[in-house]
Length: 213
Image (cartoon, rainbow, N blue to C red):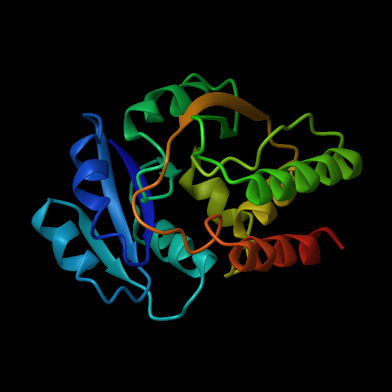
């Protein structure tokens, strides 16, 4: 069994589609980060394990899910309908075959799925990451996989939007093998808290920029 950590803040619309497409052998853990739309109850009714994280922040929700996980391999993915859970086996395969220690889903966006401002911010961050580390990455990968115990040993500290970048930086510093896997990126369900708004994108970019500095 592989645990799939889904940080959630008001994703009631997308949850049935996401959880309904979870592959066999992949167990969803919904980390509810203060939803007001019954996301947690809906997830429980749909068979997901739900953990609650009162402290606001994307990284806080991810870490709560990571602590609650018990599987050797864990995945993280957005729960807004922009990522298809059926891509998870492709992302986890390099980990299972011991060809990589961290895999990142490189987004191949459907038309209109990835707003220009968000795509540009991601591009600038990955270019700076490449310059500083030498990692030939093209995306910060919102769908990713790693082994749980080594991931905990990285002692990730960011509890905001810097969490995904900090994971890559600390994994690289620890000598991890990092690999990208192409995945489809779809138009999300509902309005995004991050990429759907310029303000949200700037907030995430600011958190990640702080880590690079």
